[in-house]
Length: 180
Length: 308
Image (cartoon, rainbow over all chains, first blue to last red):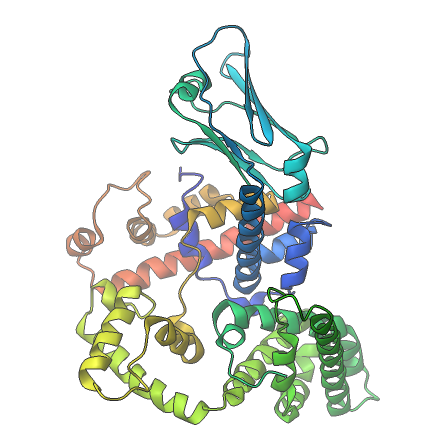
């Protein structure tokens, strides 16, 4: 079994792709549109991004730019941080209120999935990043708590995947930051 | 119209973006071209000329629109400049393109061959645009001369450093070595005593095979998964490769440090143990990667067909 995220291996493989086999084109404008206001990428466009090195380069460069722009807007607005660390607490749920977002940590009874994390973006944060921009909630220790595209209500919910440490324990050591 | 040789549009990602925009315009016009080339009553050269004329006109229209937009935002210093103004001059001398399209009319009008008409069209355009890009440089003769000197030094360095990262002409180590050697050999020649960025631009322009593989960043590949909702199923492909030729897989696993079922060891150690030269090792892992690529592209195709 290869590691699912063995990116060095996949990079080496993608490095042998032949641009001449590509059957379409993806413009910078279309990539920017898909990453910001929509409509999202069609199946043919998504396929093209995997098959064409040129389309992939364009798409990833635009994506980096879109995210950097959104990050700047968020920082300028003083949003995206949650300075306060959570003190040790009991009960089945904890809430961390950040600048422009709220994180709720639930204790579940489901075996193998003991914790759930729900991230709610404030309207002002959503307005800055647009409806098609994915977010990443990360702690200052580098662990990614939540990543993905917010739903129509500005919410993303995930199961806590770190088996070696609980969210409560990390909150006592690290602060949270929300990035586009 | 641009008056200077703007590297942002002629090199690297800027060039790829512009080329992609041109491809998009061309593909929009391609169905008419394919249909006309398949029509026996139409002379292929006329169809090709009409296609090129339409594409050029579309690009000119987009350039006009971009200029109008720029004028209406002239007070906004951050308003991005349009690449369309750089795209149009590429079609200044269209005869080679018309000729290439006419010559390849068979592939452009028929599907079911080794390449699709779209693939054939994009390949012709790619070659035409590469040649045009070089002609657009106001100092192309001088640049070519500079490149010849850079290329000589680069090849010498690659030969002198077989088996090290400096050998690889797409590595930063190689570029640094080339820059230092150029300074040593030609201390007073300002044309080739260049910054690393400018040196990279020369490699981008003149040495397609030296192009850096830009997919090293884990975040980029994870971003691809996130944005496309697809990740290639690598395991079945790797298993098939192992069955076919285990030694190929071992070389690729060592190169990419995929030590799930291969004993961890350095490249040098592996080459010495198996008795491979650096070049033979590279050939092996590249052959393995190419074999996996076909399998993984099929897997991606399947996933996208299923998601429709």
